[in-house]
Image (cartoon, rainbow, N blue to C red):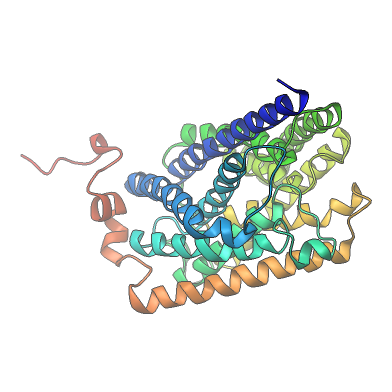
Length: 390
């Protein structure tokens, strides 16, 4: 075996293993969302997560990948490995939407939107940067997808949330905000840790190659920075909640870690570990105050997805010039505006079409009863439901 063949095999294997780690993030999103919704909607949110992954993979295979990349000529690793790595990214973007619209969206309408997002909306904006389009030419930099994946998913989610409205009982007539606690904090914590682990494939795999001293060193630094940003995001959210409410709010701590991960994703290889820590601190601060602000605006996001992936994603894009000499703030703003404008606008149109045709919100009695019974016919926690039999 020649050195070139060995490098080809190693890089192909590394890309595939990284993609498996990113695919495992689907389990993380599933557990996180299952923990943060009420027990009566647990089965339905799991159905959404399994089906969105299946639909995303199929639609991206049939159309999305070609729309985003055309027919790329790859010589350093197997083309099929590149496709597999890219397809798990589009599934991640769609997973962001499911949490934000949880507990009141019709399952069929959600899956129809999934088809359009993964086949067309996501690939079009991805082609502008990763596909060699005008954003790449303009100098826009987003190494692993703070904007292309995470902010895009949040933009689509925001459009859906605006049209859906809040869950019943979330907000009072006089501005009151009523907490709707999730059913299973252990699952939410497990989901976050799975996502944290999967992110090493998300960011590390985006180097695309491991062979050679330079690639190996960059990948190692990416792992260190990814971990540092998440840790400091969690610590910051914990401290902020201690100061504000004298409580160790687990959901905010989890979202602090995830916000740190999202923010460092835009450029995980260039910063020093100390700078990565500072990026995580900023993300942890931002996500707490963003979640509180969106609640005051009556934008009901059961899992904090818009704040974690949208606000922290934008923040991650804007701090890239601090560590990368090739990035400029103007190019980053152009990219962020183009991605958000396209995804939000296109998603809003699709949500509107679904709203006037099939409807996007479940009926009030179905929302009260829970989607597990009305939509799935399988309850996640049947032992806690009063028996209908004598």
